[in-house]
Image 1 (cartoon, one colour):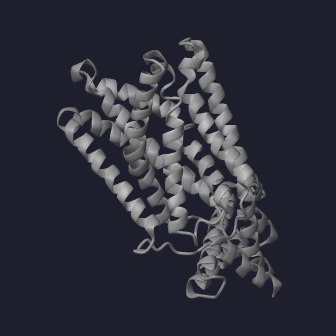
Image 2 (cartoon, one colour):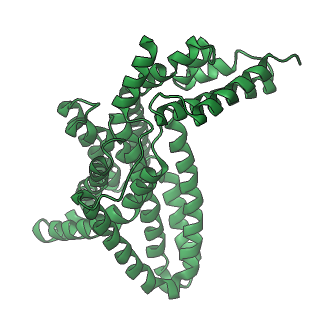
Image 3 (cartoon, helix red, strand yellow):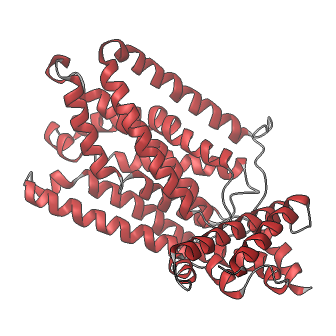
Length: 388
C-alpha cells in the first residue's frame, strides 16, 4: 500500500522512535560532553560546599521553590512536544548540560572574565552598565548551544529536524535557568551579613520567578532550532540564512534583556516598559520559530497515522486533530457536548499518540505493543459509541 510505504519513509527520515545509545567510547563528542558536565558538577559542588554551612536555609528554600518551578516548565515543554517526542534520556542530558556544563563550566567564568576586560579596557562605569548585556548573550547562548550541537552528534539518529533542536534547546535552557536562579538566590543570602538570609534570598527568588518565564528557555529553543538549520541533518537540509537569523535573534533578545537598565538610563518606568516590550517580542519570536519548525513534524504524524484511518482505527477528524495544532485539538474535543464526552475525546487523542509512538518505535511494523495500543483505541471507540 502507498500509505504504508509513506509511513515507513516518514519514520526513517524523522528518526522517530529511534533509541539513544550513550555508550559510544569512540565518539569524541560523548567524552567532551562528559568532561564538561563533570567539571561543572565539581565546580558547583565546590561553590555550594563553601556556602551551605552558613547559608543552608536559603539554599534549601530556593532549591525547593525552583524545583517546583522547573517541574512546571518541564511539564509545559513536554506538552508542546506532541509529535515525534524526544526520548527521556536525551531530554535529561540536555537539562544536565544546561544546568552544569553551560552554567558552571562556561558561563560563570566566561562572563566574569569578559566583564573584567570591559572594565580594564573601557572603564568601570561601562562595565557596570553594559557588561552583562555584552557578555551573557555570547557565553551563555553559545554554551547552551554547544550542548545541543554535541547531542546532535551523540544522537544523530534522533535529532534530525529543526523542531528537535527547538525542544532540546528548550530543555538545555531550562536546566540553565534553574541552576542559575538557585545560584542568584544563594548569592543574595550574605546581604546584611546573612542576618536575614531567607528574606533576602526569597526576594531574589520572587524576582527570578517573575521574569524567568521569558528568558533562557525561549532563547535556547530559538538558538537550538537555528543551530540545526546551520549544521543540517539527513532530514533537514542546511538553511544557513534562517539558522543565522535564529541564532542572532536569541542572542539579541538576551542582550536587550540584560541591558534594560543601561538603555533606560536607570529610569524605573522606562525599565518596566522595556521589560514588557522585550518579553512580548521574545514570545512573538519563539511562537514564530515554533510555527516555522513544527510543519514537518505534523506532516510526519499524518504520514504515520494515515493508514490507521484507512483501517478504521482513526477517523479523519481524529487524524486532523492529532497532526494539527492546539486549535485543531480543541475543535475536535468541542464537537461533543458534555464534560464526559469531551474527556473521552481527549483520551482518544492521547491513546492515538501512544499508538503513533509504538508504530514509530517498531519502524512501521506490527508488534505486540502496536497491537495493544490499537486495541486500546478500539476500546475507547467502543466506549464512545456505547449508549449512555
